Image (cartoon, rainbow, N blue to C red; front, side, top):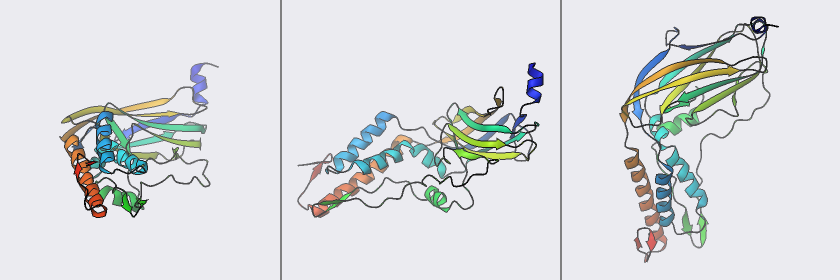
Length: 276
């Protein structure tokens, strides 16, 4: 069987990046806040400062929560501003269903991608709107360590019963911006309606002009080669000083921890977070 004949028996996947009016585009532009991620060294230095401010042996859970906030600080800041989005239309125009279809949305360069809020996504909406802060330090009451109850981000959603012909996020819908988003479908029907995907664009950079791209790649068990399409992205950014913001968050939390310690040990004085 020659290649052309083989392709006629396969799913025929079409990918298009779309404007807000539904026209195919090869380039998208916009403006937003931009911020780089903290380096591993910067995060480690901040965590050590927090560790020294709470001289208890059982603080690891709290430090891990604070570390996660610091590692995602750049995207948390961008959560609170208007986001540039990309719209993608995908269809299976062939005469066969696509078996075990996989859609991958990839950000290239400093581009990160996130799933937009659902209409019923009150928890994530509230999370994005509230002030960014580190989790409260654990406190001592008597001799027992008490950790305050701290709600995290939305947890994994149960799979339940799945429609074989629908797409689902793999492994679960992401709550934070990431370089790649994946969706899977066991049997993507042919000649079905166009599926529209929308992603929010984030950046890991403090440059005033950001250039990168977004790629949509679709593969399936009965597709001889993946389908691919790319849109170029240019963002005019308003840089945010991530170093200053992180230092402010950590210093505020250290002051709170020292105040809590002084409340239970009135005679204690601290220098650089260490008792003397």
